[in-house]
Image 1: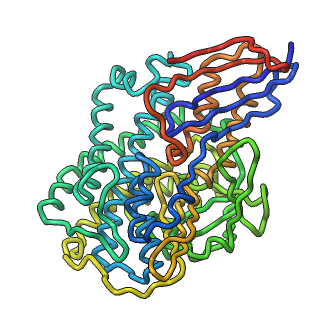
Image 2: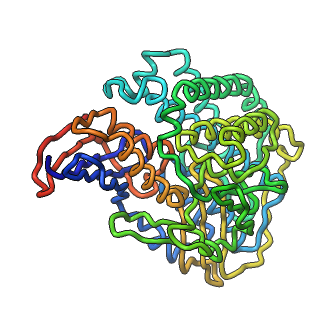
Image 3: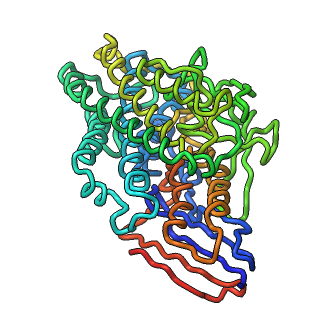
Length: 475
């Protein structure tokens, strides 16, 4: 048998465009598998020269999936640069919009993107292994999943005027108060949303119990874990300190997000445009860490809402006293966060200040730079702006959530390929497992690229001389 290279392009059911190359040796074993982000963003450069107050409307155009996350992180960076902390009611309203984003994004990922693998099977016919297949297999559950996402999107629309690219947060606060009628409209869907999320948790737990062998060999990685926390190491998604723990659960750092450059550096590989962040004191790759739902739950000791906190206690028992390193449990963590976000929506709406019209701080005490950090659905998102005295942007640094997980996705692809590709016959289902290793992290590569039209998947198998041996195509 000759050495071969397998190319999977594009990776499906993720936000954006990436490819995987798998190199096989003469024995048919995997030498190494690579995860390539092969698009260039350039947003940092062409934001230079814009005004800092424009950034909350410019940076959401990075992505149509994550616009709320960029919108709020940018506004927080503007608060910092202009010395204009928002009034408490404005902070509550921003957090409310953020919870809507968490619910709609996490809900969509579990049910529509990852769900086909879990509910229909990794080896199911790709023609039905999608949202349409789910609708045919379980129409009642699919409708509930659509309504879950709709509820989150409606929160964004009510506050920001539209579901995508909202106009709401501005440096110093927000531009619209919430009415009692709008609050009551959001609350009217609460019970159904909680029931749907609990159904998702039950589905995931049942699947995990039946597929424990896969979970325990599917990209089980040792890394650090990274995310925002409030006092008591309580899960936080909008504002707090960054906590970093190692693979055993020992705290390495807890710091003000504005000081991130003292702790984080970025490594570069020539086969990807996406950088590899790491913990400076340990170097690369010893200092790599994971973010997003798995990273945040591992870095948190408790959750402030009761139902999600009970689920967190169960999550903490998965691996005894050590953090959970099983990549497929990203889905478990994602659903627990969805439950927290929904519970937090009600807590925010029950706060008397949520209807206040004191929503903007017009005082200004400008500084030469501002940093805004938020926990986007996919992980810690950092916006850092260097600003002239007149408010014009000189320099921008963006560390997008998915970037933090670049090492983890790359290692997961390599691990799953080596685990499941064991012989000469390479099925589509095996290649789908390699894609699922990326999918579990819910990357948003739309922050790197925009695609128009239908994107087929083409798998090319070539020998060591790069001669094409076989082509698998899925339109």
